[in-house]
Image (tube, rainbow, N blue to C red; front, top):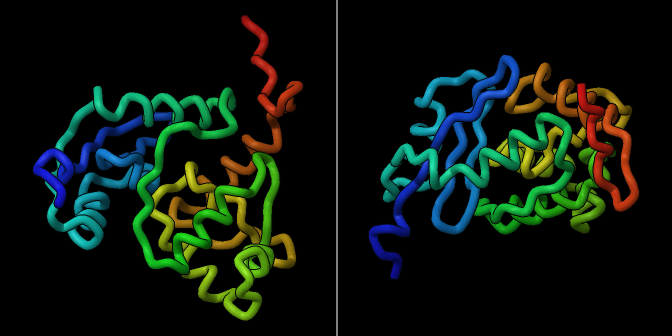
Length: 186
């Protein structure tokens, strides 16, 4: 049985260039990354459906590790995340989200590729629905999924965000060990 502290949904806002993102975590890990420049209402509606027994508490200190890793990723100085993730969904959704986490930085896969990877080749539309339900943008990289013909497709964060994330990943040269080269100092 969970105690009161386990039913807290911590949140904060991170800013990057012209984006402000609401992010939230349970005691188990990051569970929500919002779309750019959306009001707090976006996260409260999501929490009311997914975590109705949780109290929403703004806590910048508790959210600092998540905010730092997301900020570093968006600045091009981080390619992978080490913070825990607490994605809650159906068994099918979580299998899709795990497949997304396996897409290497700077690469893309099609919905069909993901369906094949989870051994459900006839479930391309269901894969698309699961990707659309991904609560943790960027960290679970659904922006790396494109149409079978290579076209960019829908994204909860908006097409501008998807395009910028893909451009960011393609623009980062890899150093030995798969990490981006440090930017030259000014």
